[in-house]
Length: 66
Image 1 (cartoon, rainbow, N blue to C red):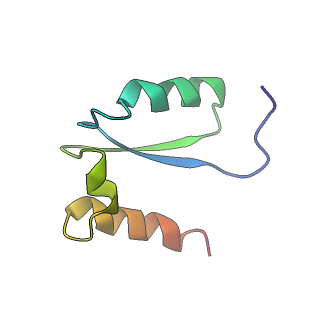
Image 2 (cartoon, one colour):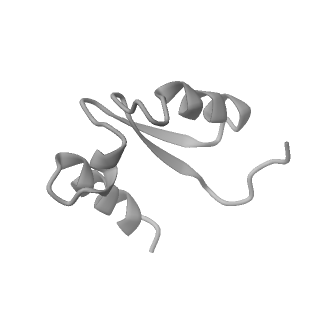
């Protein structure tokens, strides 16, 4: 695998049964410069649901890109 050129942040719900946290951990192990944001009590779809607390974290992270 080649080195990352751009910064990468992964937002991972601890309760994600679709893409388990071990997938994000594996990616971070392969690319140590990756920033992992683990969200407690958060499932897969919570990250894209504006009615959840996780959504505010998604917005915060997106704002750091600009």
